[in-house]
Image: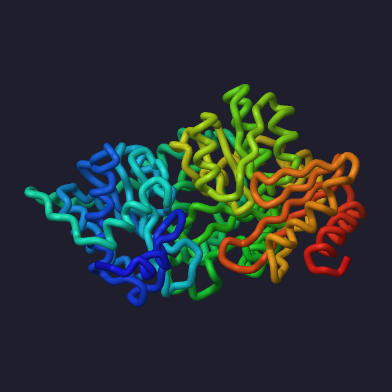
Length: 460
């Protein structure tokens, strides 16, 4: 029996993550495999098999076989697909119609590992959809072994994954593009060459060696310092575009031909327009700190813009509820109905490359993206505050009586006017408020940002 406090520390809202072997050991993962199968059976979705993949972290060699033993102990087969990206595991789950487990700690440092679980067809497993029950099982006595144990087999699905992605976005007729890619020593080093093979792409690779110790920089492209090598490579080689992936290659960030970062909201707007051209009138999900250009583009393209809370569990729930064709969020996650409503960084990258490659020779990516950049953005500004609820209350009071200003509390507090808006959200783990501001002009952005920060930091 495990102490609930220990489990609460490693079993998060959406996945399981910690330091190996400090926070969990092989026995934990063996029991987790059995608990996962038991949870599925209890919820009426009993699984005959579980598909299992892993990233390049060294500890996968110990914990993946342990998890497979637990799956077998519970009476289900384990299908090991080996090294893969997280979206490669989601593909396997959808392609085979089986629940899955992806062993990764995403962008965390090398000492971390963990697992993301999903039901068949890549349906998410979070706290409300299975992880809470798994925690209860792990805190109790180990489930009894099945009368007939399952078996373990290996299967290579990389070629099928590549073929499926190529069926989603046609790049066969585009002009040749020079594409710089920083894989950050993560799984992009495996998937990108396979996906780009045979396409009219001149690949300029950076840090493609799979190395879970991350010797060059953290595999976390949301941090600006981790993009500097890619930006320099684009400028030095004259690449048309640069792409950066995180450790498990489910997130993608991009820079243009000048080495300038492309806001994920801009990519969301571009892909939304492309998908709506194929599926007119569909819903598209965007989270509430995305640029207001996103709903503008969606509506102008004849789609239905659906605003979501921040976090992939909310995006995925809204994708399902609205049968949305596409969803995007500021953190570099992009979700596709054609990909079982799951997220795929490389699929988003293919859309970006197709949009550029379909233009006339000499057209720069910055020119292609210009129509989607309509607002000035602050980026996320974090402030430590002594009393988060009281600070939010002061902001609410300051803006509630202003003419032409609307407030809503879908996620934190959003304050909207005709030509500016901001959102303030509390951190889930720290005494911080996260501020995002957007305005039509630089002057209005500066004024709006200063007004909100003055209240948050007590300088107004």
